[in-house]
Length: 304
Length: 303
Image (tube, rainbow over all chains, first blue to last red):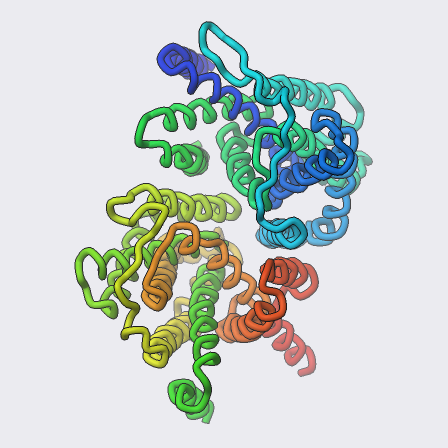
């Protein structure tokens, strides 16, 4: 406990120094980090409860971006309203993917599951490629490019919605897992599927539910992201790895840790980007942290 | 008798350019490149470790070979060995850490390492030409496609030979034991880490050499296309469709999928990769042992 406390103090001081020295990097980092953790939470949910790393996670995000784009261009639906449509659609899509592809292979070797979701991700990317070509598309809404003044620093105001959303989603998930009956069942399945089955929890239903819930949450992130990002078939891909990095860093079953890890990594990434001449190296931050976190945990477990 | 047949098939493969057209030779060359990658991926999988890093080592080899020719004016033929050596060295250094990981952690770390290699290739612009890549003055053998075919064929046959040696010598027992039950293998006195490191370094060297071949054939490297996911995806699908844990399986898969993809490219120039994704998903769902594995099982069941 004490070791953790020292770590948090050092972290807080480091973040404060960055905020003081490079305020832009700090605020952009908070925004990007919120977005990353918003996308990572559903992935961590599936990984923690179903025990499956969904390599098609980023493609779910891409799909929801395209849906939002479609709603916007066809019916002029505001991207902030569109979750009312896209979330149920993605919920259904997640359920279908789970029932069609995943469920029947759950019993086999789990490397098969990894390859399976990898295949699903390729099929999704290439379908989007065929239907909409790889041309990037954009949604323009005036409110997305407003800026706010914080202590004399002008930063985009819209992106703080990510932070609001991630706090809401995290609180919602935690409350759901602790307070509701279905949430407690989900928690139990995550801890011990066999035991949960013995006490009468429908494990298969919980798995299907978690998978669709995750897809639905991704749709929410997609709607928020849609106005600030180009939309093309490969846009979601990097988010899979980033989400997994955050999950690996926070440790399984640690949902608040993911948000913290996301914000720290977001700031670290923006900090590297803000050093002149090193912009291209910013992508390295996530991978180095991912590899370091995995290796550190692997060695730590061995000693423990 | 069996060996005699194999020898005849090999000789026929070498003589093939005298009988068929240039287009087929080109197709066969690319099939054999993917065949070597598929076999090397399968050789690692036989130890129970799923590697997503083959595109990374492929790209590493490609870059090493192009830089060796361009900056150190090494003969292109030797640069392939340089590339294999370089990939092996990197694999040796990384293997000490990576091979202590298991299952999805190993898979994800190797995938992350591929991206790290690509970021290095893109950012060390003095050496690698940055995101524009680097182009050589001319390709190997001055672009003579028949000589390139022979070279690729020799490499592919070497890889097949190595894979067969793995299946026939003592090392096979160690590898199968590690895959089936690591703790039991350890208790029986198998030095797991040594074997894993050996296989990892060897397969990485193969991937590096194949990457060098590919780069020398087209005489250029570029981060996005050299580290493309295709060099992971296609070999994986080939090995899975043909049948994993065997030498013949990936060969069958490479020939079937390689010819199919050439055909698909003609009728569906855009987004033909979707077929690969579908094949990957369907094979794992309905034919988890692949073509070769299923056939072997059927024959065994009949007896």
